[in-house]
Length: 241
Image 1 (cartoon, rainbow, N blue to C red):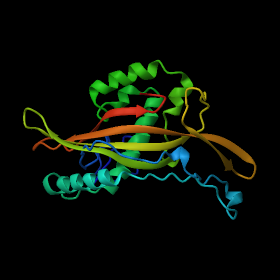
Image 2 (image 1 turned 30 degrees about the horizontal axis):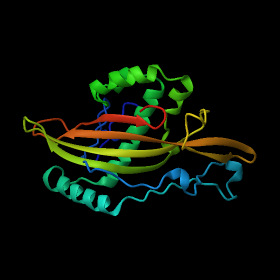
Image 3 (image 1 turned 180 degrees about the vertical axis):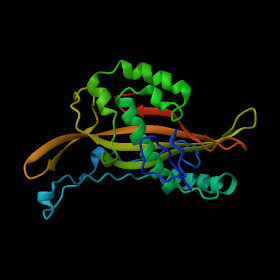
Image 4 (image 1 turned 135 degrees about the vertical axis):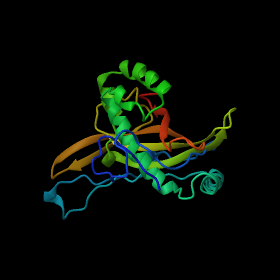
């Protein structure tokens, strides 16, 4: 089963560890993933108050269409993972766990809480993130945060199974996320992103921008190694490359 350990989620089952997240799944690397950009698609998501429960609710719908060849190839990788690494592997469960991890880590990044990333993000990556985030304007830092309810779409990307020179076995899965933010960002820097106006209550309107992020999860499957997933790559388009 996929398990996710997050320090700030007290409602997680007692079998979860409260020190780090563990996505008990596997990783696999393909080369590409073809996706229809969310900004070019009809979009709607519910934002309403209790007083407006009986009225139609606007929604943002983001649809991803993978390349058929890549889709088929990744399914072969998923089969190999279940056969040789984890019999209970489920890409659906992994995707849900990755979404929670993405929300948690992005929140820590937006607050520049880099020490809290230890055990969640690869050590060499934490130093790079601290340097990059430190040079970002405060508005860009806030825009890194993706609350769970603002994540519009999540899609597995590249998948890979590999061995190092010492015979250690690894699996990696690249995840793509689309999320909304209400942080004001300059249009010249955020070129290619789409803006949405959503209704909150009867009259209040709020502009939100659809952003994308890429997180890569990696786990070592060598015998005797703890089944911990670590984030080895983080990119927020136009914010943190």
